[in-house]
Amino acid sequence: MHISEGVLSAPILISGATLTALGTAVGLKKLDYDRIMNVSIMTSTFFVASLIHVPLPGAGSVHLVLNGLMGIILGWACIPAILVALFLQAVLFQFGGLVVLGTNTFIMATPSLLCYLFFRPWLQHTGLKGKVASFSCGFISVLLSSIFMALALVASDKGFLKTSMVVVGTHFPMMIIEGFITMFTISFLAKVQPDFIDIK
Amino acid sequence: MKTLFTISFFLIVLLLFSIEAGAHRIRVFAYENGGKIYAEAVFNGGKPAKDSEVLVQNGNTHTLLYTTTTDANGKTHFPIPEEAKSNQIPLDIIVDMGEGHRNHWLLNPEDYLATTSPTVQPTKVVKQKNVPRPPADPVNEEQLKKLIGEALDEKLAPLKRMIAQNMEKGPSLKDILGGLGYIFGIAGIVAYMNAKKRTNLATSSLEESNHNG
Image 1 (cartoon, rainbow over the protein chains, first blue to last red):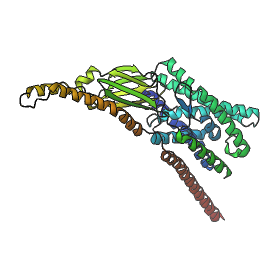
Image 2: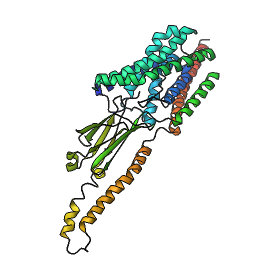
Image 3: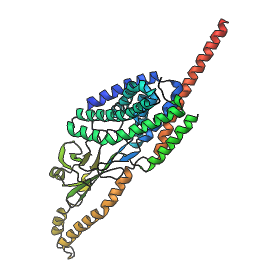
Image 4: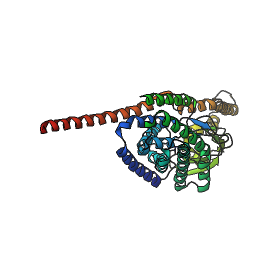
């Protein structure tokens, strides 16, 4: 899910960085500073999750993203959180890169935010409705991220059909896995520690 | 607090999982053997990057010299481009997976011209000084050099590959723990600043109320 350095064109890099900067500003403004520890826990989770690889039959492997979970738990604060995690991944693991940091953050954080905003009313339910909503958050976040990624690659001139098929196709198993992980984590947290989830 | 412990527990479990897993990043390695350049691309986990686009560029000007694709084992080979041979330019071998994963390997002229070019020149030198030299067969000497060069290349290729592997190792536990430390450190600083701001506000409002009262 991390786009490497030297793949994207300048306009995509610049617009990604600008949108991420705006999102980060809003995210920091909306951040409830009493919940800073929750934010750092989720940032750590996201930071480590990218190291967990799920081998795919045939083509390589994909890693966990958990951006749906980030969105549900953090709301707007997921943008600065994902930015920090991706920055550290770029510096320490050489995943992605510093030049593509803005675009990568946009690709991963925007879907989480959109899912959070869209599914918020449903997520407050604890029953089946809540479960479906959290599964959808996990599923759709990865789906949207892979679509954004495909669009970024296409806009940088990379042969439309092939890339979008490859990107969305390879991430499809991930969408299901993430959906289940998000669903179980949210229903567990809702039982054990409902305060942890930012849904009001 | 209870949440913190639960979440920390999950984090540690995640961490244990992650240690064995490699990065989703490709590693490119290229070497010359017998006048051809061999390139291979693997994911850090060890899986070959198959059917990937391989671009051979002039390392100085970044003009494209040659394109090919990797086979099912993530390997490919191609003849040294003529332009590179005559101009002694570094070759930048780029492997692009087409889904945003891309890496490169720089092959310097001394790396790929070492065994091919010197074979022509020594013959002249040897022939010129043929008379005062001991009666060693110049052709055999030259052939021997070439043979040794080829054999060395063959033997050294896995070693070179190993060095390349070690140069681009996946994240170590040190990196992971360091990153987690940074995250909690940043959060700690933010929390501290926030607490300070709050106490300042509280004391100023207290002073104000005292003043009014």
